Image (cartoon, rainbow, N blue to C red):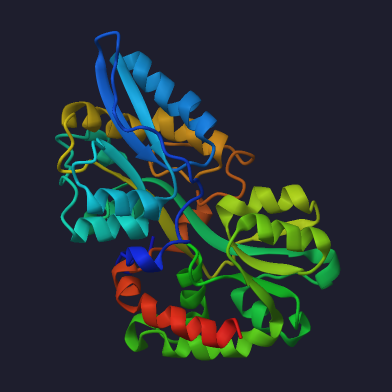
Length: 354
């Protein structure tokens, strides 16, 4: 992957940038059988699959009892920030929150000594790890989903989004979502400007040019799926983890990642400094990024793997940041995004939501 820098976003501004989930478990872990106990804070999405494919195998292998705290990334990060003694041993976060947590000094600095499988991370995942955002456990990127029959032609590039033929036919992710800032990077590329050189000025000019084509912005993948199903839109910019949802609602939807490249976002895992079970936590992290675990979750949860040893066949690799797609996926500077997001939200609302 092409290196850009990395992430970090103010918790108050990233409320909708995190993964789904809003329930929370009691974080007091007790193993009545006398084994080891661990509290893992993670995303609420597909909790049943997470338990089956990750938690239960870990418990069986390590004679451990894992208690899950589930919810969206920003809420769980904010809880840890406000109370570092909350009893969390391991926390999985969106890249933005993880980078902010590193800035706040919340996490242990993990090396290959504690987690040997770090050596097997992909190039892009190592960039994120070296930035201090934590150890990547999943990667996604953005592409274009569209109804080829209704559009009447193939869409092959980001530049096609600005075509006058698509007036009133497009939806793009809101700035407050995970993919929102990535959309600004794409717009800045359209303007021929490195977004880090002008703090997004050219990007917003490009978004003004795009606005006639945009029916509305979206905050939830389910809303986007409904818009495709109802025929309200024919084209959208979307993160690959949501493609299955859209194609489930609209079988005519085709997903492409332009040959010119895309932008990636990672979910990462960290061990809080105040964890009471660090050795077991390191073991959990090591297994979480192992080849076997990464392969299993890539298939069951449609997540791009971050372990370079994972091999997926053509069917398994569909709609994932893997292989050739991963090769042309660029990392972004979420620390830069963090410094500018509040201003970007104001500009976005004036430009796209009025």
